[in-house]
Length: 313
View (tube, rainbow, N blue to C red):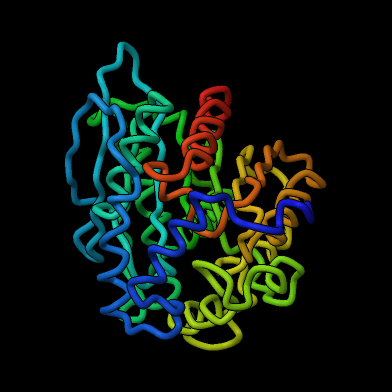
């Protein structure tokens, strides 16, 4: 993998340069309002996917308030549904920022997509996002008949913090005997929280769109105290038992500081006899998945993940 760590692809470097030209020095140097405003521009990076379906905003829960955006396409039989959790370090982002990505994922898989707006920190700290994510997943199963998807074919998915939430929902579904999950898609997820890995040393020191300092900053705004940093609902690699979890598709950029923990989680799942497809994308940085409109590697990764999810469902 060393050769893949030398340089970003030309398109990824151009994207990083454009981000830095806006004065970006790292998330840890920004205020919460600044981060939320910057996340608001992410949707433009998704491009214009060929999605010929309906889009509907719905309320999942009133207390606490959880909403979601549903993407559905004409289908002869009830399709599977992807319950998707957005990026943003737990402090920013939402279904609006993921709109283009959700449309692309729906078009690529032929599945319905439910893009969840969970509560954000620091106003709502851990475990608010976890409980919202789990509640949204249970709601997707319970409401399947009304919205026309198959409750027996649910995939949980997400990128960055949303990928962590997807992994945690799988752990909780096992623990709480929740609805069946057909597969999990984890993209650039924080799974171990260790900033002393090789990938953090190679790519997390003021390199790209996420640094080790940023990881610590986001987590400190999310958890209530240091003890929670070892909770499996924050760092799934700490889970005591991962046997029996749903088949996993794990996607990460080779230049993502979180690369090594993605590899470690894949190995942990395989050791527990869980089916895993691991895709380490060469010359890509953290967050590349959100930019299929400008990064061909992101388009290819989405298509590859879609093929695997369709096979699982």
